[in-house]
Image (cartoon, rainbow, N blue to C red; front, side, top):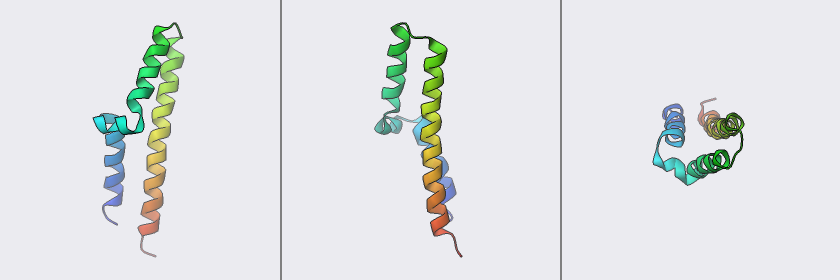
Length: 75
């Protein structure tokens, strides 16, 4: 039970900062954004969408770990 909050932080760090993020297609999302910009799409909108995708990943991981934390909490 004690390890769940730090574990959540580690999952978020892995998603954003390491090569393990490739497992959840972070690289592909970034590559699609770069290709989109290269083909003439407006860069600010493409980057905003990319940031939104990262936000959704982070919030999903945080929500799942919060649910686990609540389940493991003592009554």
